[in-house]
Length: 142
Image (cartoon, rainbow, N blue to C red):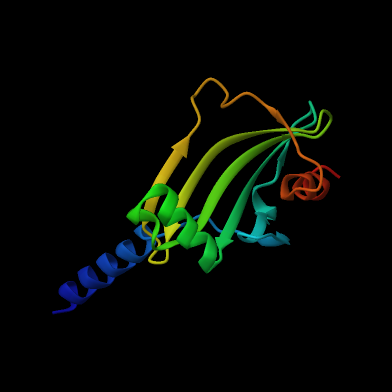
């Protein structure tokens, strides 16, 4: 009987871990905008000698944004809860690149994954002033 209980326990733990993010995070608040709440993961901030910084962000969507996403992208987004993204910030030139974004439902199921190409992601873009990316730059590029 004990082996069956042990197997059930292992399966339950595996199921719970497979349902969401397993990487520990230290989410720090960035700002609230008209779509939801922005955070960055202080544990993933990685600085490079050439003034580039990599960091993960999380955005928790508010109800009105979920309804807009459902209307724009389809029924799959009706359970949208949050997105976790990985960014590269050029602290010197004030530019950014999005490397990945994973959209999760309330049940921690992946709705959609965006992964930039392996050759370095998208072309860097200028960070707009008065944006959450500018606030992020100010927090991670000290």
